[in-house]
Image (cartoon, rainbow, N blue to C red):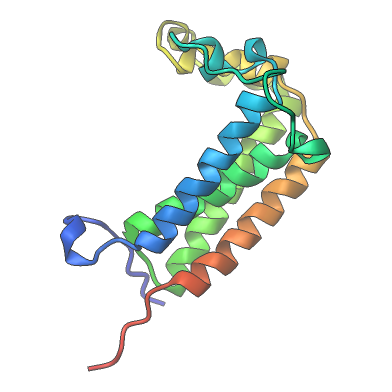
Length: 174
């Protein structure tokens, strides 16, 4: 199989799939709302580090219910698959590779919370001085492995593949 997967060069040349980008963006925002509404601000890096009060914890009802625990795992893998697919021109095999790649990345991060002994070996100390990366060690060491997150990642990747398949632009021959 020849995999043709080119990163977009010019947005105006139909080299992006706007449906996929829009769906991925909406799902990513929806997943971020979980952190704003259902999680304490001190436990969420981007809320805690913000110069403005982003947290809506206890300010609005938590309408997510019990799924708020694994919804970010689902939305992250789903959204990044759709965004990656949307910004690349991939065929069927390319879409499958994108889905599997993001599945494995998210799975590695979840498993890293269970098997965090390798963190001091793999994550360099100089991460401590770089915004966003400075929280990497704590993510693994203080994070909690959850088998429901693993299931959410799998369902998110599979769902994203189905959505990618259905939103793929079909080229007419000739």
